[in-house]
Length: 327
Figure 1: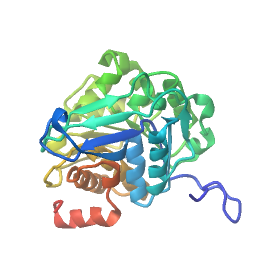
Figure 2: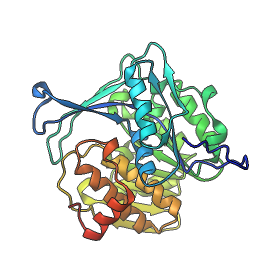
Figure 3: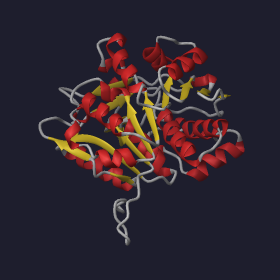
Figure 4: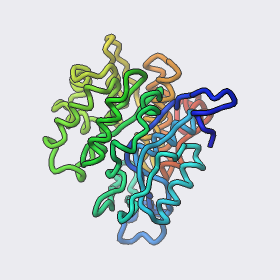
């Protein structure tokens, strides 16, 4: 991995994207339409939303690093090897003694039922990230810093996430609302932490359930407005089969439909959307083009079984956009 801090002239080159949050091993059934109790074969993949976003951005040619932690076990070794293979810098992927690397199972019932089962007990190592271990200079200099709601659900990760947000004074800071009810006692517990993070972010991304947790508002346009009122400059509300809505502080509104696709596994589509969103924002595209591109990336992943290794390359996204569908 090329060191972005040094080159022949000893100059610093910031990362395009640094993400911070969950990592784990996805164990996905190789049989569809079969309950987990009856599945006999599984595929093993790199997983975790912040990590998948990093892979998605790297697949599109961006220089990317991820801040997270694994257990001191073979699964942790596997995840670091996979990150390097996908072109994601793993220098900030630490190990936690005594805690196992998380695994996640799912069931695959296309087109719209994909139950998830998280095994993150007694505690996930990625929630053990501490503020003292952060490379705040790199986080401050990254063109995009991407953090998640899950990182706010427990200490010391919560304090570390807030410290990372506090280090940012420029660039784009994205808050992936990433609401997972199993990580919180109730939505009211999350809301004050979400509100504090929104004051530091300039982009918020979430589906209708997530924006309701963050703002108390579910209707997409009203929720986007509430996110803008909470402090961000761009609100992106994913609406599933109704497409995606985005609204910025300048008054621009874009709403685009989903790209037609035969869904195999909808998990990971939102992370592909996130990585492509970062790519489009860094490219300086107008809002509707960013959304169409991100939608296409998400649709491609929805047509595939896995998440991280399913993230598309730029030519695949452009082909889907040209075809008007994922073929």
